[in-house]
Image (cartoon, rainbow, N blue to C red; front, side, top):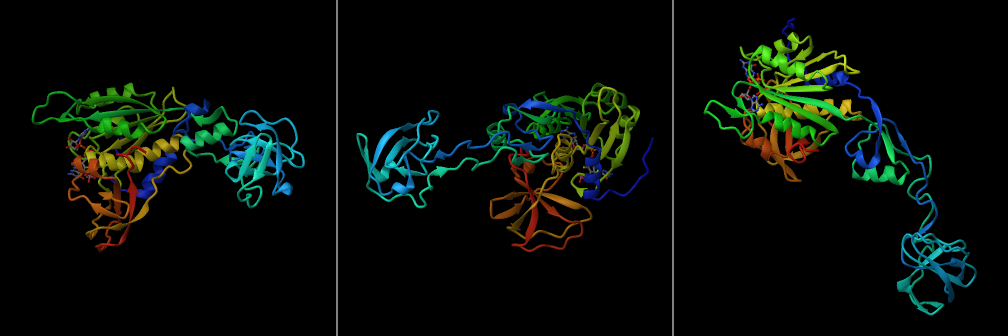
Length: 410
Ligand SMILES: Nc1nc2c(c(=O)[nH]1)N[C@H]1C(S)=C(S)[C@@H](COP(=O)(O)OP(=O)(O)OC[C@H]3O[C@@H](n4cnc5c(N)ncnc54)[C@H](O)[C@@H]3O)O[C@H]1N2
Ligand code: MOO
């Protein structure tokens, strides 16, 4: 099967078509403490009220605001985890610590710095709290039972895990971990750490792509480097039949040894589209094939071999595909506006993603934008977007940038 030669797709259309192919993974109930990086498969409602009862926010004395300015008689203590059993009556106070339950009858916490205690008697020496309830956290201040807390598709980071656990959820519904196969291909490639002849280079794309996926709940299987032979590539694709998603790098272009497309056809995959109007990354290839062991067809993403092309297309296509399959509500990278520290030359025929450095105020473009260069992608902390045919932008103009976090680890 050959695909008709069509013009490269516009970026947004290609991204939408790829995301529409994302396999939906089965839902599982995972221990919340072990769900870091997963996306919620259902909305999370509070299963309890927090705090369940009014608590003191400070160390001091719980008393009745109507009794101000005192004096009081201290009748007991409420410590965190050890509430006072009785009721605070007129002229009475209870010693209270931060996080302890406010005793019945009390509606004011006086800071210990603002009073003086001698045995059971307590007198005001400073300013009473204004309003009197200032140091009290009312029941339900954080959330109440049945409150919606996190929407479907929210990602569980440290704070979201804390919230889910505080809201009474020991387990959360998430999609199961995704199986990703990463294949390096090319006769010139040698596995990391091997001695190299001058015509060889280390296969760096596979480890790079695996590292980019590692921040997501993904199990990565790496293969290769696979030689530029149709049967070797087809055999590698056969070995990864059980993966939810397969990503290759290299061999996606028009050269005599660019065999990813024929290999996909040889293993019965359907090509969805080939080539996107972006620089770097034009020869991107997308296909899929049915697999008996999978509930959804496997998606195969053929990234270009040039390291900067593979890196940029992984940000624009691979990570969004993984996020979509894992249930993200918002899988595409989101740009922010940054000021150019220098003029940006006019754009060419494709939408470009230039390697740059943003210092919090302005963005500087790398002087080396060759898609075969790895040093600039390691220096960059952002990609600067330049539309096809864009006019020259003077220094100080606002341009869209995509932050790369820590070398793509986000
Ligand atoms: N006549 C044309 N030539 C090329 C075109 C074109 O339209 N017409 N497109 C160019 C563009 S754009 C790109 S991008 C590259 C991509 O080609 P491939 O995806 O087929 O990649 P390869 O040729 O296999 O490799 C390109 C380059 O990258 C190095 N490479 C490959 N795999 C790895 C790896 N795993 N780790 C590190 N480096 C890797 C490889 O050695 C090559 O130097 O095609 C242009 N050509
Ligand atoms: O698209 Mo290629 O990635 O320009 O070098």
